[in-house]
Structure formats: structure tokens, C-alpha cells
Length: 398
Image (cartoon, rainbow, N blue to C red; front, side):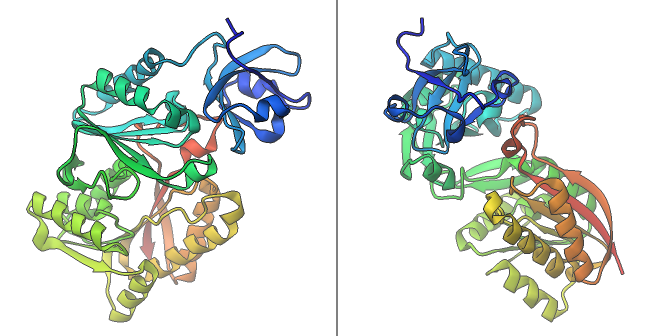
């Protein structure tokens, strides 16, 4: 049954127990990389064996990537076909349909949902696929076909952009695989309405991962003046308006994102309570301080300042600076929310950087709540990268 697949083998000093216990990746320095292994076409499948030639798993191979193999199935006899993909999608869909009463969620969260390097976000009758691994790029037609079969959606968009594809040696591209979109999609979430641009927006168009953190923030924002920094399409700001904030100010460098935030506010009938400020977030926070502005709730949700271990030190300094600039903008007894989507910065490191920044901003604090991504972004305990999102909420005095 394995004669049709190449065989790749762990080096003698590599530990097969990690794979047997669920770790999904094999790094290039853990594998015997002879000429035959290097000649395997990126995205092909192979049988992974330990150094004693005992089969471990069916894997996909990319000799061009530091992650040279990703586990597809713990059963070495399995084969990846459209039916195999459909089975994984049905399992993922069953979880989301149990969790949510409307079809707006992350349907597939890569390795944690058994489809390595593959992200699928659902927007009602449309879905956006990010094939960030070579096997998914090679089998995109099967993934899209299985997706339509399992969910019944009519529009499927391939969003092949971002740093992850570059690490796999994949080119950037955008393509509508089926159906079509005529404009931004309205997405209801936590009582707010967001506008998601599925073809021109950032990532897939909307960040579903912050849903539970939006909900926690809503408990703090009724009747409040709210500042949402790095707001994208109005994530925390629109959630605050839905919860009864008297005003939300959204700050972002993207005019397109702020236009979508304004469109979401109009769809909610809350446009009169939304203020937008376009510009660099650090510069805008400094300007607000100069203006003497104060807010009952300030939330900062910046991009990944520490996307890799090499960037960790600089990233933590950036998170500290965000906290330092944001803290003086919070009224006495008000609340500060700080977020990080950098997997290289773990919760302890991010919490310490945030606390240092708040202290340097002249404020004393209570940590009220630590949040993470929603359950449509499940994590693998063995893989820190799947548990990337941290959200800290503080009450400030002094």
C-alpha cells in the first residue's frame, strides 16, 4: 500500500515520540535529506518513518521550506483525496455549527483542524481560503470542490497573500474560484455589523479571532467613551457601539479600513457615534495626549510586532511602547485593553511588556482578564503557533 509514495526518514538523533504524540511538523534538520528527498516536488505526499524504519505518518513534503514535512494523517495507509478533505471539512463544520447560530466563523484553522497550513473563513454564502502550504496550493481545486459540497456555499475565493506563503516558496496571488462578490459582505457579530472586503481587505477580510474579546470589552463600554487603536474595520469600536458606548473613536493607518468601519456603523444606525482618525497609531496616540483627550476605555490591537523569534526583542519593546502611550489616555478608573497576535511572544512575555509600559506611562493597574482567540480558532497544545492571540484587560488608577 506504500509503494506508490516516496519514503522519508528521521535522523537517528531525532525523536519520533513527538510525531507519535501529535506534533504536526518535521523540521529540515530532523530529516535525512538525501538527493531523493530533495527531489520530491513541493506539496507531494510521502511516508514518514523513524530511524528504525518504522512508519510514523502520512506527510506532505516541501524541500523548499524549513518545515520540510507536515503530518497529514497519523495513519500511514491514508491517502489525501477530495473525499479525505471533505471528511475533515465535515468534522470542522460540525464544531462551528454547534458553536454559532449564523454561518460567520473560521471554518478551518490549519493544523488544529487537520488541514495543515490551510485557513478557511466563512462569510455566509462565501468563503476565503488561504492555502499557506504547498500541498494546499497544489490541491486547491479539490479543497474548493469539497468545501462547496460540504457547506453548500457558492462563492470561493483564494487569498494567496502573506508572509506564510513566502516561507513555503509560494507566490502571492488572488483568485475567485467560484461565484462572485459585488462588494463588502455584512457580518453580524456580538450585536455589531462589520463590513468585510473579501478580495481587497487584510487577510481574509475580517478577524474572527477577537470575537470573545470584543464580547468581554462590551461589558466595560456601556455609556463609555471608547478609543480603538489599530482598529482595522472597527473591531472593538463597533462592538462598543453595539453595547451602548456614547462614542467610539477608531484609529488606523488604512483609509479603506476606516471606510469599512464607517459603513458598518451606518448599517447599525450608529454612524453619529463613530469618529475616525487616519494615521500612524503611535503618532495619533501622541497627538491625542497633546490634545488632552481622555477615554473611559482604550483598546489597542496592533499587528504582529514579533512574528518570529528573531523579532521578539524588538517586538516586545513595541508592545511596551503601545502600553506607555495608551495608558495616559485612559481616564482614572477606566480600562485598557492590550492585544498581541505574535506567537513568538508568549503570554508571560507580553503581560510583562504591557505592565512595564503602563508603569512607564505613569499609571497603576489591576489585571482583570486574559483572553485568547475564540473556539473557532482551536489550538494544538503541541504547537504554540496555533495559540497566538493574547488579550489583556486592565483597570487603571492614578
